Amino acid sequence: MLAEVALLKEKIAQIEISDAEALESFRVGILKKEIPALMARLRDVLPEDRKSFGLAINELKELAQNRFKIAQEQIEAQKVRADDQPLDLTLPTLANALGSVHPLSLVKNRIIEIFERIGFHVADGPEIEDDWHNFTALNFPPNHPAREMQDTFFLEKDPDIALRTHTSSVQVRLMESQKPPLRAIMPGRVYRNEAISARAHCIFHQVEGLYIDEQVSLLDLKQTLFHFAREMFGQNTQIRFRPSFFPFTEPSAEVDISCNICQGKGCNVCKYSGWLEIGGCGMVDPNVLQSCGIDAEKYTGFAFGMGIERMAMLKYQIRDLRLFTENDIRFLRQFRSQIH
Ligand code: PHE
Image (cartoon, rainbow, N blue to C red; front, top):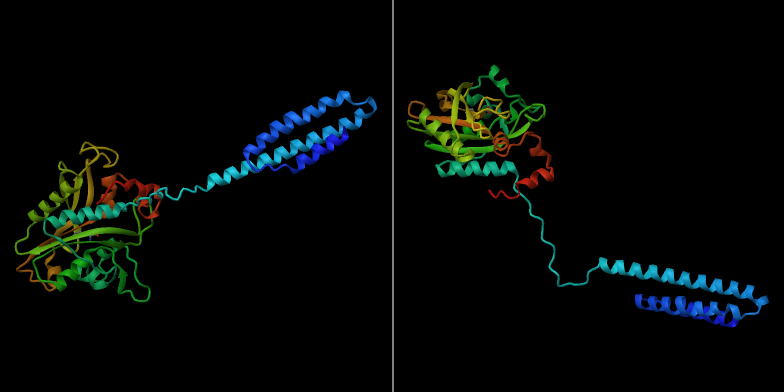
């Protein structure tokens, strides 16, 4: 009897259980059949041999159960690994994730598109400027308090060199290098020494516009900006001019558009005034024309300057300027469907 137990023990040790099928036949054949059959023979054993037979068969049962458990775990683990490595090499690859155009680029491109259609071309200039192009040629006399309207980052070693505080410097470069008629817009990055907050940043973008020819009038300026505002913010948009001051324009005005959120009725975005400021403008001061070598008797011109962030905030109802530079993917992804 003990010899039969030893035989079965050897059989169990030698059985190969390499897959789910072998595991099942081990369970049915050994655990459910052969071991119970041996156990049933306990009653045929002589009373004095029962104890040692019982111990031997219990040991065998435990051994078989352990084998079963280990084999089961191995087969399970193999299955997981196989699931991890799909072997179908003909499957199509995953699509590349689509990027998106930055909202400031979207707005800048739209501005360019609108002005190009009415004959303005795009001009560019350096971001590191000298005092002449950023201030003096634009009728800011040396040490004049008007310079303090724009907190400037100067180069420590050479106070004549600064990061441009506005794109008006490109205006000067254009007038110096080309003869009228001139009709251009100048989008670009500008810098001011301001604390960063939801409403102000030390780096932002402007787009400047300049039109110089014989008999350019304030009416041309107003119609150009009116056309732009309607193209950009919708055909029902109204504009208004508020008298203002810039050293390089005379007369000067600040430009407001009717609030595109409440349609001028009053809401918290326009602070219940119905109007939103988008930039400054005016007729180019004859002093500026003269500084740049343009005959101020013969030619007149208008200029305007608008903040690109400001326009993007109004167009997409963005409340915090800092979002534009944080590169938070959750913010940027929202512009995926815009193609401009
Ligand atoms: N350069 C001015 C600014 O940055 C804006 C402006 C441009 C005003 C052109 C009038 C004409 O504040």
